[in-house]
Length: 118
Length: 109
Image (cartoon, rainbow over all chains, first blue to last red; front, top):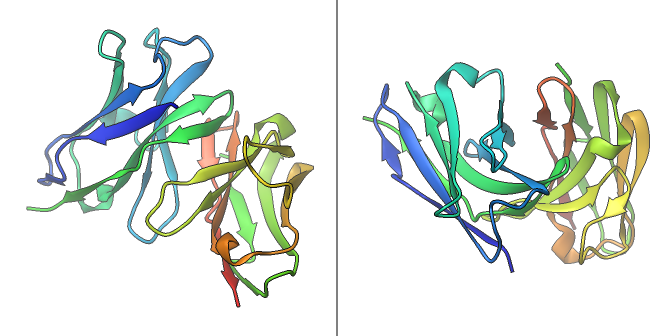
């Protein structure tokens, strides 16, 4: 059974960089059939797609975050990562890592709450 | 930019009734690229429907999807108490490449 697990700091200071890692178990991140993505959800609000990456390193980002986001992959560790710089309180959210099958998200991590506060 | 608008915002129904949830896109969406998710409190979303009408693995046949172009529908027949959740539609392939509707909260009386 495929499992995804987010890890990283739960508290980040304003203007600093949010960094999260997703560890994939029960399957290979190098599968040619899937992309791997990040989605976030501010408390009490809806879902926002951040971006996705293929095992080769090809990426696609939400234009609203494009200049601040970097998603990378480490196939040797079966992990992919998210970096979001210059964070503000508006970036406070539960961050989910996901597997993207074709054009939808079929596996999700449990999510990790990241709070931006001094 | 493709904006997905879901209606109603909240829906309150009794067990055994049928729920009809709407997702309207600001531009045409390929049916292949429209999905529906269920999110219960404190949990990650779970895919119910992909390709507008294909049920994901393990999803009961009480859940069905339909629609094309700019209008899509998620129908839940014979509501059960555990269907209480927020439901989101999602499109892929437009601009931005991926976006979600704002959600419909389904309450079971």
